[in-house]
Amino acid sequence: MSNRITYFAIVGRGASLDRPLGLVRRLEHDDGPEDESMRKDLSWQRTPVIVEWEHGSYDNELVEVSHEQASRIVQYFREKFAREREQEQEQGPAS
Image 1 (tube, one colour):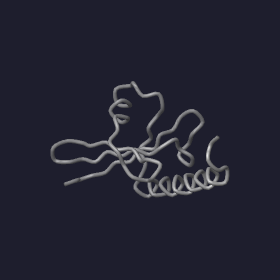
Image 2: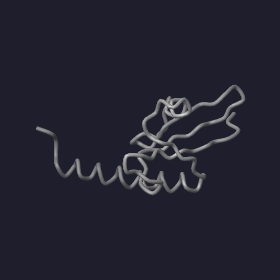
Image 3: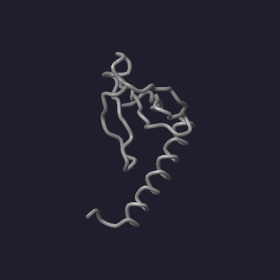
C-alpha cells in the first residue's frame, strides 16, 4: 500500500513550473519507493528519472511540487496533449 506520494515537475531548457517538460512522482511503499512518469495518455509508467536526478546523471532539474500544483500540471498537459491531437487530426496522415 502506498503511504506517501511526492510529485516533481521536470524543468530546464526554458521550461518552468507553469509550463514544465513533464511530471514524475515517487510512491513510497513499505518495501521501498516506486517512481513513475506521466505519459501522453495521462497514465503513469515506471521511470528511472528521479533516481538519475538524485545521482546527478539527469540533464534537467526536478522541482518538488504540492499535490495541488501537480493537479494543475496534469490539467496543463491534458489541454496541451488535446491541442496536439487536434492539430495532428487536422493535418491528416503523414505522407
